[in-house]
Structures are given as C-alpha cells and as structure tokens.
Image (cartoon, rainbow, N blue to C red):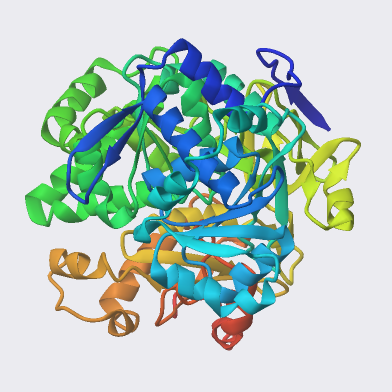
Length: 606
C-alpha cells in the first residue's frame, strides 16, 4: 500500500461558503473584471466587474426569495454554458438554495429521476424545448412549483419580482450557510445504472478553490489570466472552475458549443482552458487534415514529430540537443505558431481531465508551447484531486496530490482519496455511501499506481478490467486512448472478456472522414461504405499496430469490427461528459462482438 499527502494552505474554516468567496472578492477588488459576457453569437465581449456581477446576483436572488425559495430548497438549472448559468448559480446560493444541475441534453426520464430524487422546487431552463421536456414529467413532480425559461426572460422576470425583498434578507441568507452545508447535488452522468446524487458542500468547493489558487497560481492567478468555459456547467469540473476564478482573479467567458469553439477562442483569447482529451484530439486531427496532402502534410507530420521529440528531451539530463533545438525553432516558425493561433494565440495552459490524454498528445502540445496539465478527479471529489502543475509535471501521469488532498493505492491497486474536498455522501443512498468509504477514504473504483515522487498514473477502472480466456488481465483504456487518436476514429470499445484474444469495436468520425479521404486520393463515401473499404481498413490496421506498441502481445488488439454508426449522446451511447456507456454498447452490439470471434484465428480481418 502506497500513500502520499500534500499539505494544504490552511485548515477549513466553519464560515467558508461560496457566497463568502464572492463577498470577499467584492470587498477587496470590486472594480476587477470577473466575467466577460457575449450579448450575441459572434459579437464582442463586454466586461462585467465583480461589483456589477454581485449586484445582479443579489437582484436575481431576491426574485427567487419572492418566488418562495427557502433556505435549503433545491433549484434545477438546465442550460448550455452561458453567462446566465453562472449568474443563476450564484443567485441560488445567495438565496440560500441548493443548485441541481441538469445536462441540457437530458431526456424526460432523466429529468424526472433527478428532480424527483433531489426534491426540486423550481426549475430554470434555457429554452421552450427544455421546458417541454420538463413538462412531459411534470405530473410526476408534485413538489415542482414552476418552470422558468431563460430565453423567455427568466432573469428579468426574477429581478422584477424581487424588488420588494429587503437587502437584509439576502444578507441573512447568504451568510447563513457554512462549510458543512449542502451547496449542490450533482448527478453522476452514469455509464452504468441510474445516476447517483453526489452531495457536495460549500466547504468542498471553497477548500479546493483556495488550494487551487495555491497549486495552480501560475495558471489561474497570473496577471491577465483568463479562461473560456465550454464544457457543460452541469459537469463538476466546469462548475469548480467558475468558483476558483473568484479567489484567483481570472476572467471567465462562456462558449455554448464546441461547434463555435475555434472562433470563440480566437475572439476571447484565453490564457488557460479546461477540456476533455477528445477536444485536444480533435484540434490535432483538424490541424493535420487542414495540412492537406503531399509536401504540406509531410511538413506538418515532421513538425509534430519535432514537437514530441523536443518535449521528451526536456525531461532528459541535458535537455534538447542543439540540432533538435534548431529543428524545433524552424518547426515553430513554419507550423507550431499556426496551431497556437487556432487556439486563440494567447493560450499557455490547458488542464485536461475526464479520461487519459495519452503521452503522445501531451508531448505534442508541450512541444508547440501549450502546456497540458493532465489531472484526475471525480464528481465525488469536487473535480481535481491530483494534477500536474507548472513546476511539478510528468507527461503521461495525472500528477501528484493536489494541495490539501491525499492519495492511497490499496493492495488491490485501487485509488483511494482523502481530503476536505471529498463529498459527504450519495443522496438517499446510505448503502452506496457506506460502500464508497473505507476508514474515511473514498474508494474511487479506479486502478492506479504511485511512483516514488507521488505521481499518480491511472491504469483503468476496476469494473472494466478484461480477463481473457487465458487468464490475462487487460486494462482497455490504454489501447482505446491510443487508437482513438487516429483522425478517422471516433470511438473505441476494447472487448475480450473470457475470449481467446483482445478485439475492439470501432466507430468512424463522420466529420473527419471527407477530408481524410480527399487527402489520401480516395473517392467520397459515407461512413457505412468506408467501414467496408479495404483502403480505409488497411489504414485502421496500421493504427491498431501503432496502438499495440504500448502493450504486450497477450494484451494486443488482434481484430477490429467497424460499426456503421457512431456513439453519441443523442443515441444514448455517450454520457454528457463524453464517456462511452460500455455496458450498454456490449449489450446492444453483442452480435458484433461475437462476430469478432467466429473465426478464432486472430488476424487483421474485420
């Protein structure tokens, strides 16, 4: 059993709450900018000072009070990432309420379960379409008094209704909550089974935020620090980011969709962002595809190779050689600068979480001048619990313990977490809460290893370990992550439990397919046709061979099967945080898995 602790900056105080963070920022830097908001798509960014934001928060909080929201009442928020999400989140806290985020892509059944389990009193949604989804299950939610729609003036309505509520009432309510009081209930996106309500306290957020400024000050508290949030605010990491930017002083902006991400990055020019690995893969693959073919494509691949080699050399005694440094300088002038420009031109740091990034991409981005700090955390840990930091980075790991946290690896290789950021329990589920803890340590269900310096490497999920017929234990994540890096591939599910060898189900990326075909001199075709085209399959075989370089022969992928459809949120195979629902895929595509093993002679057949 190995264990590492990281000292926090201070012990948690009983009065710590998220409203306290905003009041403290207001008292010290009222004229500093906290948010830049966009009035329209493609429009400019308007600064909102701490004082202006706090005044609007109080105004909307008064409206919630006038609507009958009492301290401790749960209020659901269902919207894309936008300014009003952050405003309403804080207003709920200032009114003494408890925010319950709902992914804006959630189905009526998911809305019903979350609102019923949380006991939601009021729901605030973005669009009439969202209101219709809630309306479908309204009869099953007797405690739900009303549904307000942001696009139909919910914020203005609340501000108007709250005019007669006294300032003293908001002051009383916003100072009532302490560190141990419930701040939010976040329902896990659920790759298996029904989502569980994770109860996070004000102390969870505040302790992690203050320690975050200490551990990532160079990233989020540097002069001019600014971040564009494009992950769903229903996700704990994005929610944490909007809170940590209060004590850090960083300016935040909101982007509602990854479809507008590149122009939004260009106009907002963040110095740091938070993203899942799929975003970094997409940016790399798009850059490679835009290089076209022939000399330009060879130049891009050479520059990428130089970036990776240069980054790796930074971790060796003596650093990069003079020759490699010269190559790196040339590659920077010809290619790397263009990739940085596509990310806004000012980006220095990116924090990656949610799934393993992969060593290759980590080195590529560092090699072009964007440091990707890979981290690890769960909803139950209020987001980051380990993270690589500017002076403490090992590419390929998820970093050392965050300040104030502790990490342990038990005898079975499972990662256990302790610290003031760990949730207090699952809502209405005493048994699940009891099973999640061992002597005060949270059992994550993830498998990992700690090196001699305390850096954590995640090797897989304990429930996802594949045991082949030959008794070989295989963690699918490393193979899936490497294979998914190919521009043609969208999703991968490695299979082989109780089978003679490892195989994989693969889906193709419909967005990247046309460009890839054109760059390789192949005729246009749809995803279904491409999945049967020998030239496409040969490219996939080569990608499999490269992925297999990371594992032993017994762990390597011997056969793949290309599915005619992708895994998406819309068809139910991806969670809102873009994780594959492995159990559902294995159930619904059982015949495709069986097909891999009809001829048990492992080969490159598809």
